[in-house]
Amino acid sequence: MAERLVGRPVRGPSHRRVFVLVTALLLTLTTPARAQDGATYGARPAPGDGDRSSAGFTLSVGTGSAVSDAVEILNFTNDPATFDVYVADVVPSTGGSLAPAARDAEITGPAVWITVDQATVEVPARSSTVVPFTINVPEGAPLGDHTAALLVEPQRSSDTGTITSKTRVGLWVRVKVTELESQVLGDAVTRWVLPWILVILMGFAFVAWLMYVTRHRRHRWALNRREERALLRDFRSRRRDDETTSDHR
Image 1 (cartoon, helix red, strand yellow):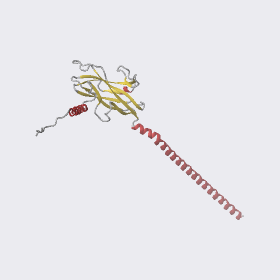
Image 2: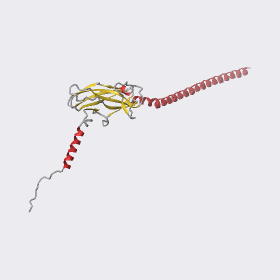
Image 3: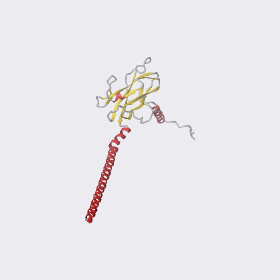
Image 4: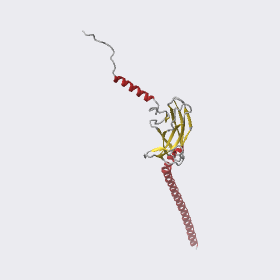
């Protein structure tokens, strides 16, 4: 009788392949944005309130007001790195899409509203740094959507030269300019409340005029009645005098 071997079943290559794929997927999910494909640095909206799923900022700001946010700069290398943080207008590219303007281009669009707290920042190795910025929308700014670019550009590394390229990473800053609640309330008051107030005031004025006319007419009527009564008494008095004189004769 042949002896039957009992032991742990041997896993085939498919099981190992699945294990490797799952491990790689978990590493991908826990790795910061832009860390794949050998990238040495990256930038993304800093953790905070609002939608952080897109590679950019979408903010709603009222005219004459300000809003703040922040960008997180990521250093994937083993050495500290220094980055320049600046803004630029958005211009049409050769392919028909939009692209950030050159760094030395004059800022004349919505990018002029953006102020970065730190123009230069040093990020430690394998770490990240958050850089705040503020958007000040002036009064009278056109309502609607406006787009600018927030750019992060590395300076050359001093010792090891880990980051030697002068490429830059850009994040769209989409600003929707709206009216302030006070302005909306003021427009509503001007559009709806003031006309009704005018109508009510005109109604009061009409009632007051009508009361004045009625009172004036009653006063005139009372004066006329007193005059008529005075004339009637005078007429009767003269008539009695005449009758008395005729009787004496």
